[in-house]
Image (cartoon, rainbow, N blue to C red; front, top):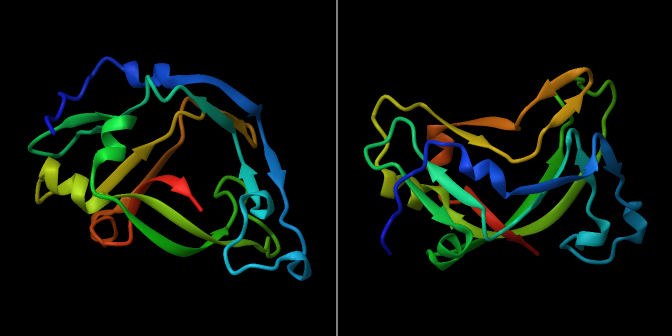
Amino acid sequence: MELSIAPTDGRERNACRSIDPAGFFIRHPPGPHLLGNFITHEDHLFQTIHMGAAVVDKDKWLLIIDGLVERPFALTFTQLCQLPRRSVTAFHECYGSPLKPPTEAVWRIGNVVWTGVPLKFLLDLARPSPTATFVWSEGLDYGTFHDITADRYQKDLPMTKALNHEVLVAYEMN
């Protein structure tokens, strides 16, 4: 597969059609006595959305790998799905938001099967600099939570964790 040059004009942001629901949204899981399977069905999985959920146009979506790498590149959703994939069964828990930390246990948990491309595979293609210590990811979601406005969601992951085989750029759940 030929890798595309990573765009620098921000066009990847055009993949966000809308935010729905907008703003904070929470769906609590049902009580444990109502769960009958080891894998938590999507309808029973909690949802905690702090700034709203991005409704994404898959035809415009791009994964861009750039920064402290030798070979920056971009992949469409279709290209991403053509790469080697693996599935990981994982315990999934929401700890809450660092902007408004929980004052009591939130107990939002589930067991899910994530499927996607190992992040290590993508990083190996990009060849990170030895000075790169974190992978930063950005989402298309944006909005305001607890009086803080953000034009995108960002999260860091230590490079040592990013290179573990179980870390995926997931595109399927269950």
